[in-house]
Image (cartoon, rainbow, N blue to C red):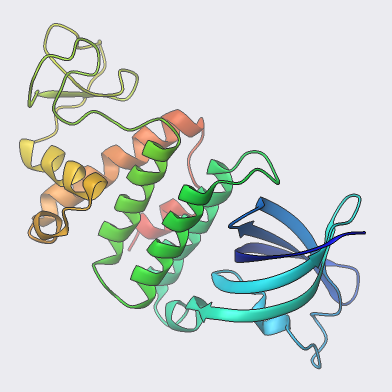
Length: 243
């Protein structure tokens, strides 16, 4: 078996046998992988605490036939230590991890842009750089964009007519003019569309200055748009929305 090293974020874990765990990792060079961490559930485990969800680690693995095997782990940043102390931040982080797994359908397929988005979002949450809801929505919009599903905010997504436009269509790919509007379309305020554009492009000054109504409407549109393109919603997202 060959040995390799990589950096990764722990997405989730599940028990295996009496003392082992299967760790789902999103790695920088090898994409999403599953690996066995032997003995990590024992109290004397050398690196069990480093392989918890949201942990950002450097690790060495054996490439196995079905599952790789973790042999060495070094912590880069323990985001979970800060995030687990706040329920809203923790549920937001779990939504990010779930989305990351959904955006990486094929194992062992590198997705460096998606990886950088996950690490950046978790770091911003852990250091409270911005409001957690803004961080989550920015992450989801940018992940959709990297996946090829960026919603149009100004031009009509069907005929390219300059906007801003009154209507927003999940099926149509974002803003649509009155002539291209399908039968079912939302009518968000211009402020909501501007907030979504700011989050997508990283214009944080405008995003931070947005009002509560625009943030709520933007979160609803983003969640619906995400569900449309992923074909089902994120289970953990509903927990965030209840806060």
